[in-house]
Length: 71
Image 1 (cartoon, helix red, strand yellow):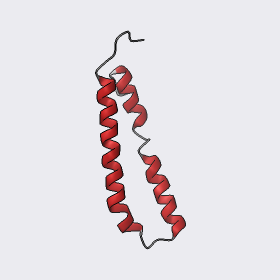
Image 2 (cartoon, one colour; image 1 turned 135 degrees about the vertical axis):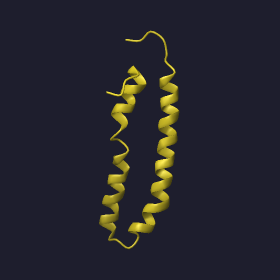
Image 3 (cartoon, one colour; image 1 turned 90 degrees about the horizontal axis):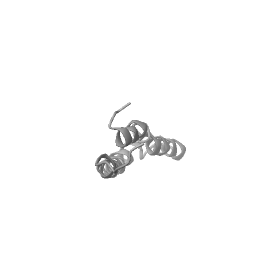
Image 4 (cartoon, one colour; image 1 turned 90 degrees about the vertical axis):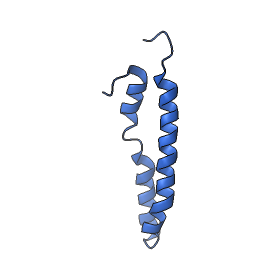
């Protein structure tokens, strides 16, 4: 267990926040144009998947913030 704070935690939090903002803006800008004519339930499914997909790299990113290793 670490005794002192590390630079990776604040940098990681800021990086994660920036990446989520960019991801959200890209989804909000381009996805509605593509799926506007789809049925409502299918649109809902797309937004649920896109709302969860950012979680995929999160585990490795949090490991890096804590340990400095990606795995």
